[in-house]
Amino acid sequence: NITVTRKLAQRLIEAQGVALSGQQLADDFGISRTAVWKHIKELEEQGYQIISVKKKGYILAGLPDTLEPTAIQAILKTKRLGRSIHYIESCPSTQIIAHQLAQENTSDGTVVMTEEQTAGRGRMARRWHSAANKGIWMSVILRPDVVPQKAPQFTLVAAVAVVRAIEQVTGLKPEIKWPNDILLNGKKCTGILTELQSDADGIQALIIGIGLNVNQVADDFDPEVQNIATSLKMESGKEIDRKELVSSMLQFLEQYTDLYIEEGFGILKLLWESYSSTIGHPVRARMAKETLEGIAESITDEGVLQLRTADGKLHGIYSADIEM
Ligand code: BT5
Image (cartoon, rainbow, N blue to C red; front, side, top):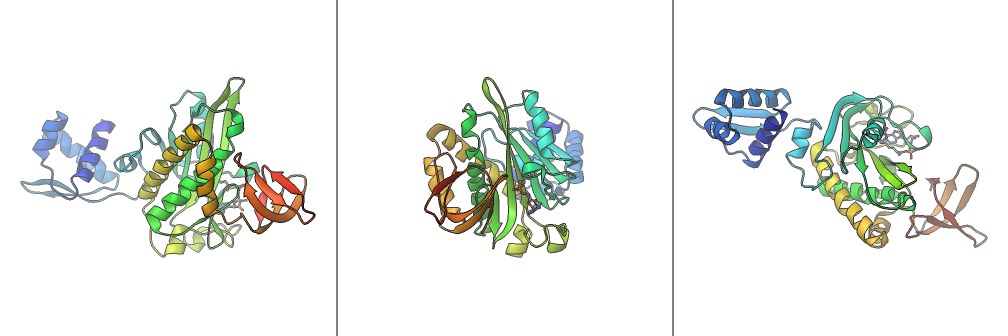
């Protein structure tokens, strides 16, 4: 039944404002006109605006502002990513759910999506603030056939996908701060967290968590991050359609992760560098045991940051917090 509701939503969207007759829909789905009407009511409850015109049928006048799978899948153009979406209105963290699903043999490309996280997490158990209905908080489960050493680059690949999607949907020009931050005017609008499930046979699942601030205003942010965080709405002055962003992100993510798996990091590295705010600049890299200052010269094909300190030495940095 859920699938009929979804298919109906899809038909209405594809009709692009043209009325679809109840009888025609009933025939196409092999159900009664009353059943069609019930599915229409269901869609209205989900926030779809549907006008019913006498003797003509149903016209779609507006989509809901939710990340409900029906609404996303109706506009999604991917082959695998997001074809299965686990949607939950509120949860502690989509990463936790994704880890559970990954252990249960869920398929490559499955997405976990929520409106609100109560315990969203960053790297090293840091908090990720995830205001209700204002952002995109999702985890993408991938099952690539690659060696574990190739896992860290997925964060960089995902960063390029997110930047491209933000550009496409909003026209804004984000920058990537190595390794996992996306900035607008120097403030963080996106964080990426790539986690791994592996065993003796190699990678079982990669879980790419993406937290993207979309429609927050300054007051929606926790005081802890108010000075360092921003949203697409704050930068563009416009309310942004989260569904369009999800759809665009998943499409770029599918395209770029496939490219990375087939061809390696080479081409994507060029793209990554073109968006980087780090490369060529003096930075301070804080790591668990030491802090280094120098020029961020480049990243390697393995995604390792090459930092040259004042004494001329080149340091390979695998993971750090970068200050500029
Ligand atoms: C990250 O960690 O940036 C990775 C964030 C990943 C979040 C996604 S949401 C979906 C999925 N489910 C989860 O539970 N997590 C993933 P890191 O580089 O460690 O940065 C964390 C730091 O960013 C915090 O210590 C704050 O300073 C800052 N921060 C927290 N919330 C923020 C927000 N909403 N916007 C901007 N900065 C924030």
